[in-house]
Length: 421
Image (cartoon, rainbow, N blue to C red; front, side, top):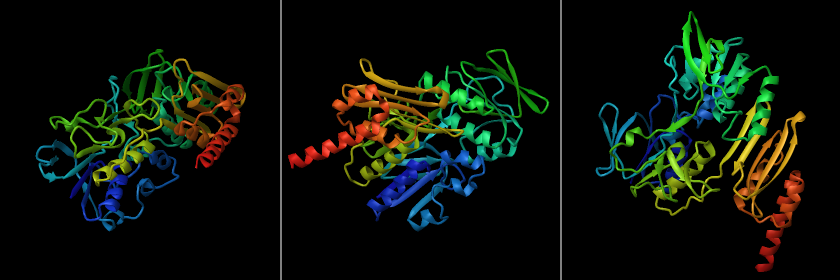
């Protein structure tokens, strides 16, 4: 059996290791299009503020990890997939055969159509090469403009601030992390950043970037012009699908899969940022570009490639973000559901916020800011779909009793299970 995995990120690496364990006699090939050893993009901010060296970004620390485990790592770009012949075309024209194929090619940063985006000094923080360039140019006192205050942008924001740069953030939305936090929480994150010396412009676009001597001139929709030594674009990502043209594999925003992460071709699977998988909360199929989802996908897809039958129950939309020491989280349907009820706690002076969203007597979504003790409990209540019963009314009055609710509900379940047994 020849297993081939396209993509050497977390989904691909976990899938390769799972295949080696479940199908020890098979050939396992991992194809990555960068010259670096397999690494985590989520580790790049730690590299930027010198908490780790380059090798600290590597997904597996021992240089011989893959060869020792019988996983062949190929450094090449796949340019086409022929599902009928079960062959991949690599750059340079070489071909590679497969029996089972996993597409785990991840995503790429979107470059907004802004005049001047091709100028020197403008980067995405997406590859290790990007990280090297930013570390070289964005030293203490450098003027840096960061485009985008979404999840990825805010991770980069903290790393830049710790480098001691003079940082200005531009966000088109009316708040920071608009796809993760509501107006209250997003507004508090903005205020927090401003108290730390970071300039933040929300409801603002970059209109153009021009070269002025050694500096860059960044013109905003507010007509303000910022001087910058470095501009970093963090304005979203898109799944890497282009090479699948003509393959017959059905795609939408990502590769369309069933609940076994199997594509329209029975021997081709998908995982990670390129996979349009099931959302636990809605039951709909969407791309969730977060590392926990990629890890789950990699394990499940590999198990099915190895002949098991493992169903993907859906990924919980989960984000945990540290913005210059302020921890924010969001889970599931954090924005609420039609006809649902909600509970909210605000302490804006202390940057504390908690929002719970209910559908019937189930917790279906939550947000928190500055409150870390409830992180695991919130996810647990949403993911187990436990019925809250009388605890729902208690939480509507006082959402801080979430730990009591969790213990009360889970202990009741255990008692009932014992009675039924």
